[in-house]
Image (cartoon, each protein chain N blue to C red):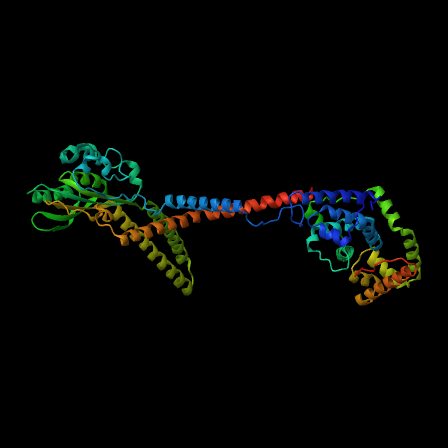
Length: 355
Length: 194
């Protein structure tokens, strides 16, 4: 029965449209809107699997390249197995905070034959910019000496420390042809001393480590200023106190602040000492150092399934760790993106509903 | 070609063949509109309730089971549910239409006239006027405040300087009296004010 009421006719037309939509591709009787969740087809499985794999690879990439530690200037040690390493400047460690043209230049330019005197003015004090920073630096050198040179070189190392305002802290000999010396050198002369000592023999191993404590230093200075200001205020209150309880209370506070100030000043003195004096450890021998075990690949020398399994497990755990680290970066981004997408979908739905 | 399937068969068929539902609509749209208009005495609300009922029936047709009561009974079940919600909330919901993407259409001038003709409200008005005259003064006033002005029972009680229970009783008795008068004349008016 066709209705003669216009409203019902319009409603019939609307229902016909909805029925057509439902018939054309939307088998669900819930209406023309696509269901929120459909059973995944093989195609969508592939898409989801691909997306998950891409996400894991991305997470691994991010995790692999994320900074692992906060150390400012860790300079790795270069282990040299022979003379060839010295001919290659790239093999020698160069600390990042040493101004260009300083002590390392003659060493890498002239090789092992350069004399201490050749350094000349190249070992000038560090640039003004470095003075602002508080950097705690230490170094070590392993030298191979010519036969009969140990005693003379031993004395020369002490003289170099003395010439650079430093001192011999510890010395230790192993027989007549080898020994170890630990020197304390003022930071501004450390590079020059390091370069000079490295000229006394063939360098087999060298390393310099640097740790930036500038932020820590500035932080302590700020705390010191605040504590001193507080002490001044407490002094003022102390002088104005009228009653015994007030006087005692302020006195106790003053005592605490004074202790705090002394603690901070002690820390600052320690950092000053650490950054103004560097330690250089020199190991010398007329004999060739024992080959380092790491230079041989044990899996090549002595193949072993157990070692291979260990390495495989380590590699797997390394990849998993990198993925976990990467997910740590990605998950917050994904959550934000999901929230944004939800807001966008919701606003679109509301607009559609209003229209 | 005339459709010879029953309402139940049309509803069942509409799962796979949605157009079958339109045939069901053609059969019962006017009756349902009359059903709503007689109970609400409001052409707008009646039209909206009709649209919403059919939209909900279409959206839920997969849940229909032929129990022997006939397809139209199932649709009237939805209609009664919708009507109850309308009386409780005072407005017609449009959730089913929105879910289906159907527009919420307004009535035009011709629609009002046609719906009044369809329901034939003249005898209803006449019967109501007579029934109202026959009501006690307190019941008539209670009905006016509650049904026409739409006040809460607490407010009705305050206006009539009586308790809320008494106000409810007056409204209830007044509606029952109106219903009896309309029934005597072969008319129906749902007293679904609660």
